[in-house]
Length: 322
Image (cartoon, rainbow, N blue to C red):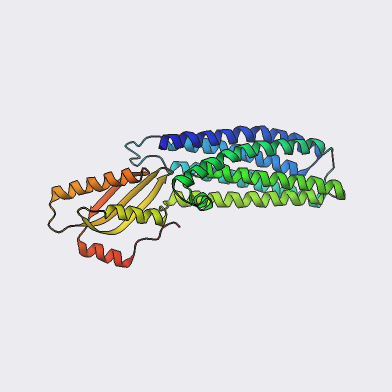
């Protein structure tokens, strides 16, 4: 399941990268011929997206390396480091350039050219960006159905930020294309390049929002984000299923990657349970957790006296991601 998800994510990112590379060149030509700052902003947007896809491909490849002596829990979190750099590229390469060109156009004006090429490029780009977005939406929708989660809730909390980046950036690209077309049309109607500059500013603001949102998510996952409260509750229930465990104290379930969760818990066993029986019970709990939740890869149970477990339960478990 994890390998299939990895390959699907790889295909989604590669498709987005190829699309963005061609679109960037076409937008640049259209922007030069039409003299549109909004088109040039969109070209910068696509260049930034292409750089982003390269970084996301690096994230997928690097995070797939198996665990070794120096990284016994694997390289899953490395995906979030490269994805964080991708969000920085979106901000610097897309948002900053778009805001700059927008301000420059409003203050200094621009020489109008033939907008026909730009309209044709925008139409073609809309189709290609739409195809890339559709693949990303299909993948996230399939995962949301598998986890029985509402689509937008899953999208907000999904741990695979490489696919999330594609969905967000392609959505922003479609909105940016509409803004660029609106700027071109208003400039034609009014004869003022200010509208083109305003379109560039709006595109820059939108890209900044996407970059900050993705950067915040990746930073949260790099630090070590918990699974959702619903999943944490289900894990607790599974540990407490009929067996030797009678109480669960502190329970931690941390995302190491999109398909990797580490579970650690302090548990109280039935009084007078022998050491051998405790070992068998721990093995049984780990087997059940892995069977019910394929994303659970590491399980650590700490046998703890009942009094300490009860005290921790009263104090409350650490807050989780909702």
